[in-house]
Length: 216
Image (cartoon, rainbow, N blue to C red):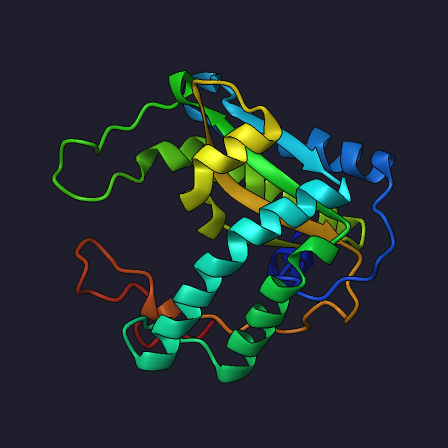
């Protein structure tokens, strides 16, 4: 698959067929994903592939109350996601059927392999994720190339102690995301809705559009 097509259609898959994803497909995806950039080539990312039904159910049982609280916030207006009602409805279906996905990949990261340079700025620290999430996106693209859908969620990271115990994750590692994978029950999206380039790129200063009036 051509790279740009994969990037434009990887989407978030919330409906899966029950067919298992073969190990060789997973291996090819992990093999490509590991080349994602990370600071100092420390390679902090580790993966736990969860296929066991009891463990998937345990993860789903941890996830669902967090999602329902989030969904309640959307309903009463205290959480603003900017999503269409259909998207929220699909996300609720995803949460209700999380244990039914073919596999859940738990993204772990070694703390000693991260180098956050923004933790003293008095705001949320995000820089450490630069050594994690490019690898995760690489995996999703490598799966998309093989016709496998995926969905990244970080809600379950709030229950990290329980997840660590369930999956025997050692000290010194954090959970950074959970990725559901499987063959899509519906077709991949042909067109994802995203903000136009003209609205997100600035020239020299934040308030000066780079492509204002450009014809591209």
